[in-house]
Image 1 (cartoon, rainbow over the protein chains, first blue to last red):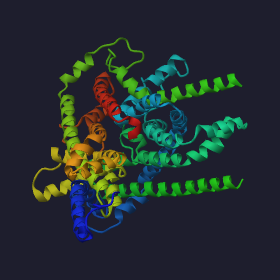
Image 2 (cartoon, rainbow over the protein chains, first blue to last red):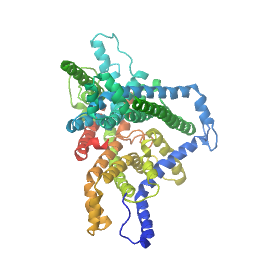
Image 3 (spheres, rainbow over the protein chains, first blue to last red):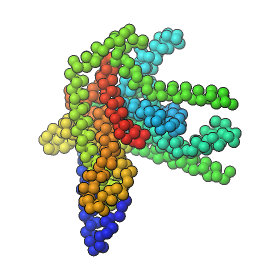
Image 4 (cartoon, rainbow over the protein chains, first blue to last red):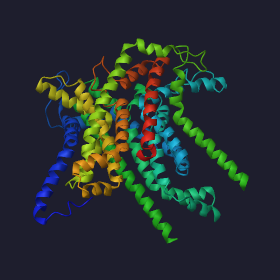
Length: 306
Length: 270
């Protein structure tokens, strides 16, 4: 930040500061107004609705009640959706991490020209949106899809497998959908690790596995933490993938929430589900990041003592 | 030792190709299917045909959806670029109390699940509509403003980065030579950060054009955007017609992305 007009006399300074603030405020005000009216206020209203009373047939009554939260948290049907969402999000995050790491490591060591080409390949699916990618996965996994036809032509199976509408399919596709984010986050951290460090360790007789476990992994930890957090949140909130790949059999939170509003018009319960989804995501993310960063710092300390 | 290294390198290239293939398979498959000659998907195809592309033009709902998506994305991008640029200048070139709060506020739409954002907007404007007596959901205006919310984190982030990254001394030099603050900005700063602004516009357009979740509640049943139209179709069946529609979107997005890469370099954005 630059100091204000350095050459002005102190007498005019106060006035200038005020002018400067007014100018700055007017510059940021359109965006602030838009986000407030279009985003903050609607969210607050939605949260407020979660405390209202749902009356079937006559919409809802203004109230201050926790019954929507109690209904959600005491109904096994909804709890199952919540736990399924968490389980699939965790599995997809782990899968995405495992698959993204080698790509990110490779990317971080590439020369600039090749790197920008590979980044285009990584980013492109991201920009297409989830619907088109889900469509491609339907073509892979459906009864007449590529996977079943390949397996059948090799004689591995005699009749097509039901792969769509299973938690497995949703997990794999979600992992593929969020992988670009994981690769980009990991890559940003990995490219800062000096290649000399790895070479030096190799020269001193460390195996590839030792180099990975003792050098790359600890140094990449901030990236792993950031990447897994981001991807976990995205998986928790996923809508298009679960609805197209999972269907009604593998219902997750976002589609269930949408149907509460759209199909049943139960705004209070929908609001409560939204609050629960955001809260569970935030709490899980916070716990995870605390545990992991504690482990990480301990391992760093241990490293320096040796 | 040498050959061992080569084998492991070969192995890692193989694994890498497999993983990238895993990411790109769906996109490649969609494009491939759009050229299949038979309407029922089977591998390998019996033959190839361009009939499905002609088919799109006959299906008014897809044509309308493309036009609506285009209009919304264009309007949202224009608004988002203007207010994003103003906000970025305010955030980087002025002393402003509560600056980091504001910065977080502009990025906050990225944090809340898009589906919740869309529903909250729907509920809010439903309420407003009832007390004001004008139709707000669905309306073009609300849809555009909702897309501005979706894109504002990207425009603010990219333009702010451009303003911080440039050499501010150039602006000061212009002012020392007697240019007014606005003139210095217009003649010096703006041309320098043009790549960031162009990139901001392109990404705003791409993310608006591809947005599904926020739009879902804010459109009319017969007048939807292209991602919603595709979703509704794929929900029931997957065939070369819808693959052709998707391929059109893939091509548009691809061209825009290559332009953005030329202007700023994608590795600087993500």
